[in-house]
Length: 242
Ligand code: TMP
Ligand code: ASP
Image (cartoon, rainbow, N blue to C red; front, side):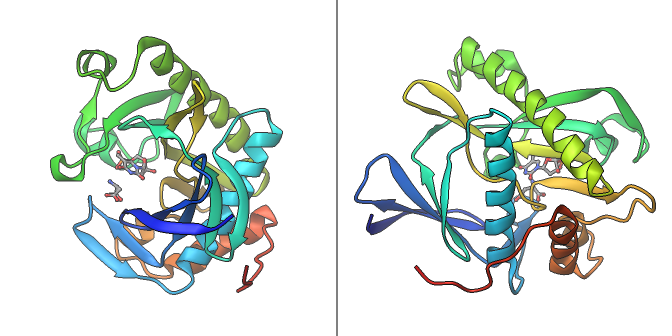
């Protein structure tokens, strides 16, 4: 398989086409962004840590019977993925209140949400990724009914798998964001699952071990990601070449 051209550069990843139209290469960069691109910094090792973190999580999800776009690691900071037709929506599940829901609804950070709650957001930085509902998705044709249902079902199935996985590593999965796409007519998990797109707290101390360290200027951002990875038993390949 050969890399062809850069298709798209996002805030933290670049996407390349290959000579196989069904496969893309994701390049995880060190760039770290928050607040819809308003705060940007390059953090050493982040690309490699997130690429391998993501591969580990995607493999765990596949083992639990959830289909993902992940095919294989290509290098320390690159992965081969299926070429999905992405829905322009983000699926968020919250097990514990934190972040935007606290501001929006005036609830205290740290409250357990029983049952966990679900929110859709529109993937649009210029608009600040506004929260949307299923009627918006249907009216604007962002996804069909059956695909909306599948995204919700899969997001909650993933919650069961990952809540337990992190709990065994002494971590609370507070919330997370997923993106899905279609591959040969099927809804498949795309994008990434890394500490950039979720909140993880130490179960005892509730220390933040995710991108909130960057958003809130708490320091030791990548050290925290590496601590989570170590607790999960992820072995980093270091810098290996193709
Ligand atoms: P929020 O509290 O900012 O709404 O985010 C909820 C969770 O989803 C949090 O773990 C961050 C993640 N998220 C993203 O990574 N990107 C996004 O664009 C959104 C809306 C949420
Ligand atoms: N809205 C998310 C954040 O604040 C994602 C992003 O803007 O990149 O980090």
